[in-house]
Image (cartoon, rainbow, N blue to C red; front, side, top):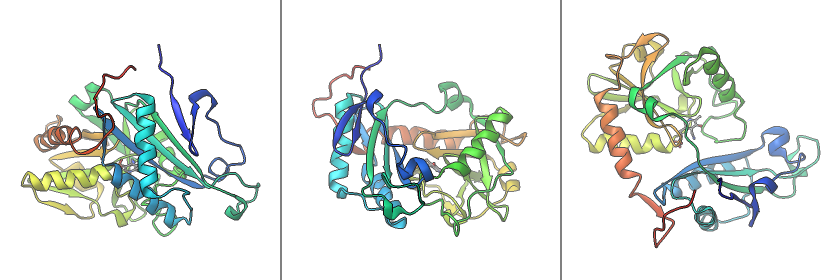
Amino acid sequence: MTADRWVFMNGEYKRKEEATVSVFDHGFLYGDGIFEGIRVYDGNIFRLKEHIERLYDSAKSILLNIPYTIEEMETAVVEAVRKNGLRDAYIRLVVSRGVGDLSLNPDSCEKANVIIIVDQVRLFSKELFEKGISVITVPTRRNIPDALDPKIKSLNYLNNILVRIEANRAGVAEAIMLNSHGYVTEGSGDNIFIVKRGVIYTPPTYLGALEGITRGVIMELAEKQGYTVKEQPFTRHDVYVADEVFLTGTAAEVISVVDVDGRKIGNGLPGPIAKELMAEFHKLVKVDGVQVYSDAPAATV
Ligand code: PMP
């Protein structure tokens, strides 16, 4: 039996089946809006504040007024999780420009639509986390930051979706985008790291990548474990000859890449540094964040 899902819509809770938005919403018509993906681990909302801050940064960048303070939004997210009674969940926070006319003009939209969905999601199977994934690099380039900056977590994900389609057609779990100068940027929904001779590298986000919260967490954890982490541009070649490659993201968590464009990475198995960081990450997510349930009841799913 599937449990009821309650969706927060502008301060009210609606059942999943009734949680609908107008076709005149500019989020639907033009991708005019922003979003966040947040994870709950054992009743603990991981890095809630950072996610909310990134949401408000995205909003500021596109001049979108969110009709809640940061504190009110945090409270709303905690309550939405509690209302759904889940201990392990994925939270999707969406703020669209709202209902307007058919013109592009955002001034026709009276008020933003604020939506919080709490559900379960699993991007990769347990087996893929254990064995690692194969990826490809694709001809579709990452949006250039001076057109639409990938640091803005906007509802305009068509760039990423085109990449996802290429991954699906190639029969691989994820694909990596280069920027228009041939530098590696990120996956369709995750950041990339490579390891060479014990040093960990990740592309600077100015090349065209989201400033992933998991990316930041992994950089902190790696430094705590004594590794040197460098934000440095690199090319496909550097990925092919890396000792280890791994991806990070709220949904992707930390996952090893064992094959890139048919080149086996290392010995073709998840590498030791990725495995160590994965283990540290899973320890951290249970303790670092906002606890939803004070009495820690077992969830009914
Ligand atoms: N890059 C893109 C394009 C993403 O959509 C995501 C997922 N939000 C990430 C990277 C990873 O970011 P985070 O660790 O904050 O989930």
